[in-house]
Length: 223
Ligand code: PMT
Image 1 (tube, helix red, strand yellow):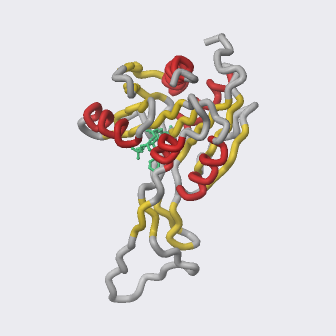
Image 2: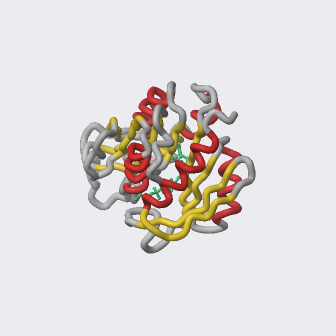
Image 3: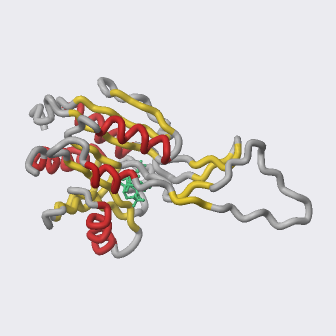
């Protein structure tokens, strides 16, 4: 899209995967590279938006013309999202956020004890950032978009997740070879709370990003 249809708009995007520390050298994490979220940031900037990119552990260069805030954990990401969302026209959560974090952080490196079984790792639930933003809508007319990486019953699970999270759009991508986590390409169906279903064929992550912005532009200030 050559059109600056996001000019004057502020969009907030999360990218990458949170890391939940266990001790000074270990964490619970996931395979998100941040590429899909960074593609959303680049395409939104190209369409004229003011972009705040909340980046969780992505090993990617900061995109030009974008405000980048680097975070580590889900709790840090929540704080950054809620702060940036106050005047946002759209919030897009492409990050893979850990549902749980280790209950205890060991200040010293956890050691293996000779002849003993390892201690189990107790987990605590993390806040659901997407559900919280969708429930609060800090700015009237704000569009809230979630992502879901699914392995089975992709559309059925996607529809249920869209309802549960209360967002306007949910981008459902199936986990597989050469798509979703870590790849340059993706393929998805974008589900709308209004019942719409927009399939996006396999291609560069920018293509999916531009379709998301097309659907967001249609919905900004509609509600
Ligand atoms: O980064 P890449 O390598 O390019 O890969 C892109 C991607 C696969 C990470 C991305 O396309 C994607 O699907 N992101 C969401 C991953 C996921 O599995 O999300 P989820 O089903 O756990 O969560 C659903 C939605 O709720 C997401 O928008 C997530 O950001 C949000 N969430 C989840 C848990 C939580 N505690 N807080 C949240 O806000």
